[in-house]
Image (tube, rainbow, N blue to C red; front, side, top):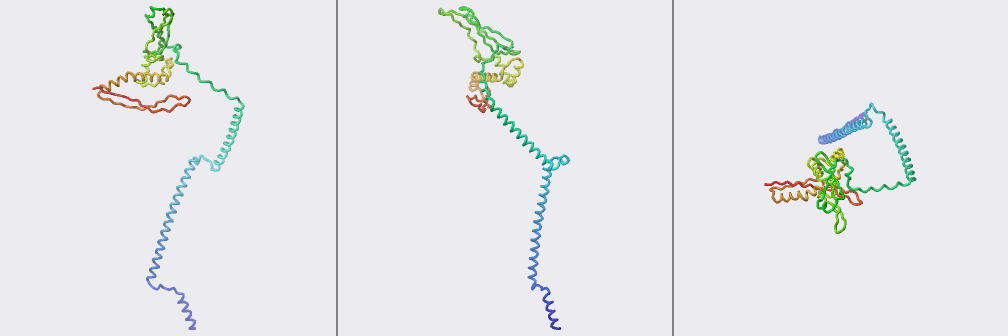
Length: 312
């Protein structure tokens, strides 16, 4: 009985929890537990931040997808299901393939027909220009001027006239100036010869425009600022066909003549006598001349120089 009781007491004592040996061990275990709890809390906070970021990205993606659906399929009340649109797209692709096949067949038949036909004849050569415009066919008023030579009239007889025509401008409109230069038949050293009245000096030899027309054109272009294509339209309304190319060429020649004479003399006088001389250059595109057998060249950059001077 006593032995059995002693064994029971030993078993109960052995199963009872053991207390730590000292306070230092207990404090160390508490510190380790607190550190572990703090680490777990920081890990949980990091995971919660990642979850919140993923949820925000998911919401943004859902919003973008909804916006793209609206842009792609239109308002919800006016569109069908996605499956219906996919079926419609398939039908459209099938129709496109069928149309492409029909187009290929038609092109193949056309090529076969072109190969069977004889080659077309080469294009006709461009006719050569026929020179200046014939003013004798114009319906404008005509002014006749006879140029005679009294000295030749005394020595021979008048046999006819050589005529030349120019486009003349007078106040009120354009007219055709006909200059008739007399021709005389003379006896010189026992032989009969023909001499004509010397032609008066003109600004341009064999020019279509009279000096008055050139002056009118310069005033319209540079003083009033009217472009040549508008002048061409105005003259067409008046019954006279004068193209802008002829205007530009004559204006260029007038500028060259004035630059070599009047403007050159003005520059020399200004350089020798003026008190202040200033210049200004404005840019302009210049079209180079054509090359034989080659395409047109690109425009080059040029300058217009303006000179102003002041006399004391």
